[in-house]
Image 1 (spheres, rainbow, N blue to C red):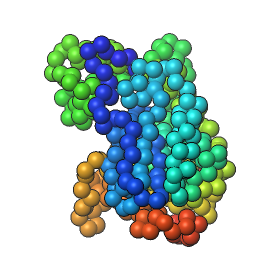
Image 2 (cartoon, one colour):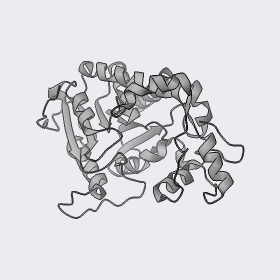
Image 3 (cartoon, rainbow, N blue to C red):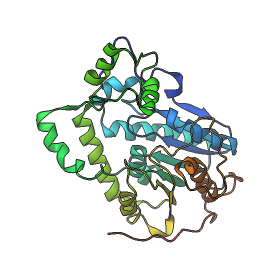
Image 4 (cartoon, rainbow, N blue to C red):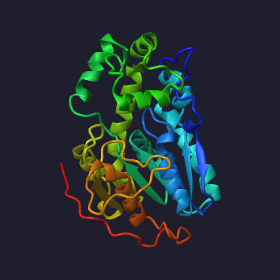
Length: 307
């Protein structure tokens, strides 16, 4: 992604790596494509509040380093996770690996080597939705970059919120700055192809994961669609895998400081953070993190297999 001399993407301190809590057990969290530790902060606060040490790293080529994304490879991400994990494992026991979206594909890649005590995959990416898988290689022959904001609607409050975090200080009502966003903010096709390749490899690695794994999927997610996640889950070893579909879209993680108090029986997307946290708490030894991890804390839920 091209950076502007006036605006440094992801310059805010919320996008930096963080460590929260000082419990004996730890969770290492991996953000998604285009994300930063900011999207995991709310979940980290909850882990810390429940007696865990929560850590989120910033992957190479993301955050303030986004201008170098085109020169970053999947192996750089694997190495960064491996380095953080070795430090965490030395100081904490047990250790859980959590990946969100593209971070889940990374977690699947490194699980066999790192051997986490538990693994959580939230909205696990392994393929692009629908027809996009087929057309991107052809697109790359004619256009080496995608401009995702080329036709942006700057009146969309969700887009304004995202761009406000991406480019602190930018004036989204200024036509010149809108034009900069439309023309200059781009994603290299080579990077997307790299992520697609990594997703396919994660899919093929799934049967060889011998770690108790919790998979969480938003029912209304249009980025990582439920049907694709069911296919991925069907490849994970059944006795070790727990799968939940909960209300919510792709951004179903709790935000920093967000209260988790939905109404009883609420099945709307607004209830998704509370549902996600409850699923994690029911599965992990959250109240007693010092308990040996090999104790049977959970009962796998029935899963409808798909081909």
